[in-house]
Structure formats: structure tokens, C-alpha cells
Length: 253
Image (cartoon, rainbow, N blue to C red; front, top):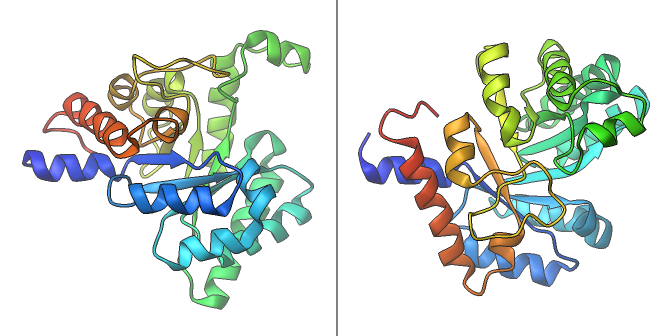
């Protein structure tokens, strides 16, 4: 693989978090960055502010959208939400793996049924394990006495058994998941990515783009270091450059 192909491959692995309040802000960022990154994440803030109409608009324009609303409810409710998410034409969405196997299987089944009826592409459905803002103390406060690593591995194994397409973990757990599960096609999405010159903000388990790429992450989610930059395009390009240099010519992803 030559350097140009490798660079383009790394661009497709970068997801920019649209952590803004309005459609205008989101559309401005997408317009600037759509040729520089692989996908955009719509999270709770923007989805609460602008709703499904913006997500549908972005997806209809050919933008790959990761809907990050972390569904977690009774199986029937999550199944209904998953079907509606799939019909929006998005590329990826997530559920909390801690919701259990019945809930995750219901989400996958409902999304698949909706896509078959509507002749749509099935979105990637990934299970959220332990948030990057959490540590062992946070787990303990909710009655979980496992270490973060133990909890992440347990939930990742459960997610894989349910047939979902991957997990959301911090980059610190990516190599562990890659080495332990060995499930073909099972993808690892990592938030908590910060360039070396950036602050950690509310994230506790973070890595640089190069470290995360080397650790086995399939997709890197980056928000403030790009969205808050004076030159967003240059910020994205620098992150892709770092990923490319870390990946090397034999990178399999």
C-alpha cells in the first residue's frame, strides 16, 4: 500500500464529534471537514437540540453519521428506537452493553428487520462498555467491584456474543480487546483521543491518535481538539498524519 492509499485509509478511521448546540454550527463543521475525515458523531447535545431531522438531512447528503445516544432501556423500547435509528440511514449507533444480552439482541434484530423492509444498509451497532470519564471509583459507586479492564472485557465479550458489530472502549483497553476476543470483523471505537498538546478535559483514560492507532483502534473519535481549533481542517489533517505515521505500510485496517 503506497503512502497516498494509507493516508486515505486513516482518514476513514477518524470520526469528528459534533458536540455543538445548533444545526448551523454542525453544518458549518461538516462543510469544512467532510473531505478530511470519515464520519461525524451526533451526540446527546446536538440530538436533543435539533432532533432526528438534522441526522436524516446529514445522512441523506451522503455523510456517514455515528448516532451516539447510547440506548439503554427495556428490550422492547430499545428495539423500537433501534428500528427508527436504522431508518434514518445512519452509519453507526450505540447501545449500553450493560443493558444485557436481551436488550442488545432486540436492538440488532429490530434494526435488521427495519433495514430489510426498507431496503436500507444495516448500521453498525456497537456496545458501550465503560465511559472514558469513569474509573474504578466510579464503578464502585454503582456497586461494580471489578477493575475497569475486567468490566470492559466482560461487556465486550457479551457484546460479541450478541452479534453486535463492535464496542466502544477507551484506547487503553483496545489492545486487550483485540488480543482477547479475536472475533473477525469485530470493530473497536475509541473516544478519549487527545493530541499531545491538548487538555484532557473531562476524559480520564485518554491517548494520542498515534498511540490509539497503534493499540488497535479501528475508529478514533475526536471532538474538541478539532472542533475548537482555529483551523479545523489543519487540526484534522495533523491527526490523520499522526495516525498514518503510527500505522505504517503493513497496517491491516
